[in-house]
Image 1 (spheres, one colour):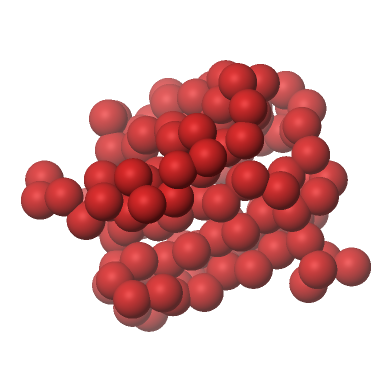
Image 2 (image 1 turned 135 degrees about the vertical axis):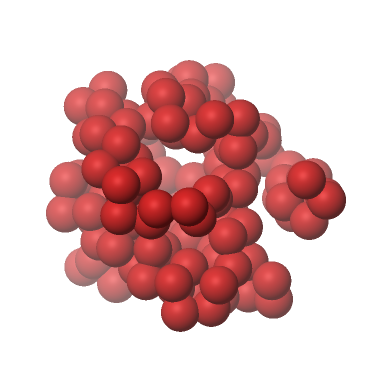
Length: 126
């Protein structure tokens, strides 16, 4: 079941994490693990989270992502991720801002249904 809901793979110069359906704690943790594993293996720090087919997550999932980001900051050390989060609606956008906003240090942005703009933003020189 998890394989049908989560894909994490390198695509060109970025890491693509696609979440589909209902998101629970196990899927969120597995997504984070795979993303960080690929970041370390490929040295790509640009990550696109595609949540277009994600069912509305709970606030608890957003808070869990925020907590995992805080813990990951210690593990990643000097590596700073640039993350684009692709969302279908304002509720998921709001939750994404809670999930990634605390420790993102401006290195994340939420996009509504616009994968092309998300990729362009990721590819911009910082």
